[in-house]
Image 1 (cartoon, rainbow, N blue to C red):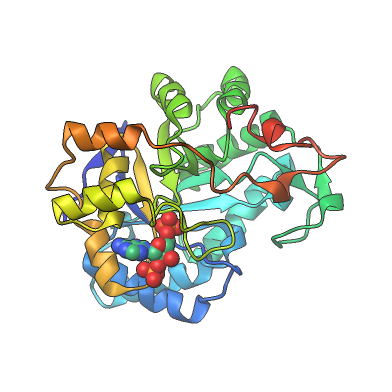
Image 2 (image 1 turned 30 degrees about the vertical axis):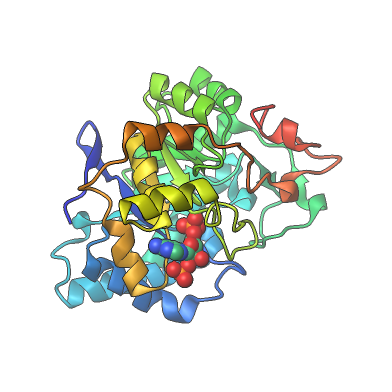
Length: 318
Ligand code: A2P
């Protein structure tokens, strides 16, 4: 398939990406490389990983194989995102963390490097869930400065954030020399992020939707999206799958969806969302669905940390 692209300057983001987060992290490492190769064969060109997922290495191996097998002619045909884990969210740890990520991926540069969460942990550990005692104060400005340095060095083409509220984005924007290109957040028909999307659109920040199908089967996901009656009815009426309706809906909202499947038929199906549309009535029905965040982030709260409640973590935008 030819992907619609979101363009800023010379940087184009394929508007559908393949996610690689599995929990417990690393659970499917042995199958991940093969799955990613299948994805490349099917036409996926955008891959999303993170230091904490333990999927950087298999992704790197899959990219090397894809080049060797001639599935792609050059690394430049791919759009690769990775994320800074919280224990590296300290000014002086950002560049070394990116270098380690590039080493894992066997790449010279990332297309996009994101601050994974607005949280810092004591350096040295890469684990989730983490010990609440390891949560330390988060200084977004100095971490962002280090992210800007990474882009300046050419080690990543763009920088951005993940799991940031409008308020936290404002904090970054108030001192940023380079504004975040992306905010990657949970988004699906049951958590539509209307306010955040409006804010990001005004600021020229692309929203990327993680858990576009509600991440069923993971520790942070639920079956609510895949079992939603309204979505089932729309899917049936259209002769599409419920997953396709979710992905098409995300696309029509102007965001980039990051979807994951380990099943070839479903991987193929998820790509088939660009040559049909939802009707105005279907979009309206989806816009009226009751909202409930699937992953409020209880693991990120602590009595002594920056966030004591989910309201504080998301600045009331929940
Ligand atoms: P599977 O790997 O067996 O296909 P999310 O992208 O929101 O994190 O959701 C990922 C989950 O959704 C995975 O459990 C994946 O399972 C499942 N999934 C992905 N694509 C589809 C699809 N087209 N139909 C049904 N389930 C899907």
